[in-house]
Image (spheres, rainbow over the protein chains, first blue to last red):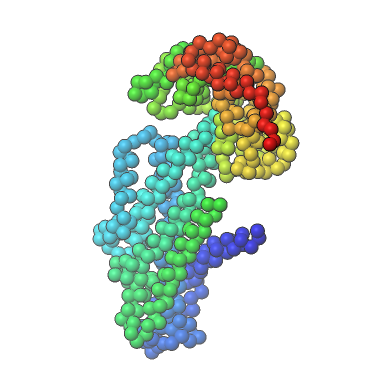
Length: 266
Length: 263
């Protein structure tokens, strides 16, 4: 019995640690990610530059770590906003609180039918690229899906027998929502957020790769892949580091999401 | 006295779910309520608790709890009565508890919030009432999550909560339906012993239970009371078709004095 439980926790804790490493690793970065050293362009890995340098002689390791901070900062910050605001709004619009309302139903169905990437394009088109725009666009696009999920699940949970028993024992609606429904939803909501975090990383990286990224004075993985593309033939290792970082972090979010699902299924 | 006077409940579409229902439940009395499924038994219970679905409403009549009309109470006032004055025993105990909360916490919080007790007082009350319903291993029960206990045990926990809250009137929605023979007998025994001073409305299809507990039984059919009387007279002199079928089924069951024999 003991080994599987330890295994399961490892399967959640190790990916979580990798994510923490990528999002806070910039604190231990060996060099300034923006400082170029034209004498050491395309340097091989050394004690000073553990992963070598890029076409401007900037430390790749430091850039990976700072890039992780910007990318995962947006992703985690966005998820936190989605979690808090989405939960409140989802519960408020559920049938437990509101009367059945065809307008709200239709509106939510309509806006969630548009894929998140379309929102990103519209927002970036309207306000130009930048970290703030990306954060807002991602938050808005995911919060709508999230509200829909919370709303539906709240309604389902409200229909269960224990809620009727709680009412018969004199519990208030607020108490039922906060003490009974919310804890019953939380694992599913975290699972949803983990999977959407992985999507968000790909979206941010993808957009910054095609130049709609976070702006010029920000380091991020998509931008690094774009820069490294020019030197792909002569220095192929340069492109591998940011790609590995993207793969590793999305993989970690996916593993956590999957493990939580497996735990739930028990 | 819990008195239901000429109660009619109507759906939005205009269909009557209950029509002109009148009954009286006095303290110390167990009143039975039976009828085929869909005849409005649960709707009747829901209207007493003020938990009717949004699509239906009380059209006419009164629900009087000691001369206080419940049918027009606000949600908040109604809630004050639920649990304290009116108790509920659920049909399926397996789904009646929040599966992510320990039994101990559910009992303790209910007592704390509703009876304004301190934490340790609520704990002590929970233990005391669990012993009353013959759940001796209180520490295990209180520390267990609902799915870890059997249906019979959970149903007794539900009764223990009721005993702790001590409402004057108890509405039981087919409390024995999801239980096996042994647990059913145990529950009926506990109800007979512990609920002597309460007024109980016992909704059930269980003839033996109705016979054993109830002084008077009402039969609902399509939202109306179609028959009433003691279970014995209902069975021996059934008037309506449904009751005739019900009693003949019952007789067949009781005629079986044969045994399984090993070949």
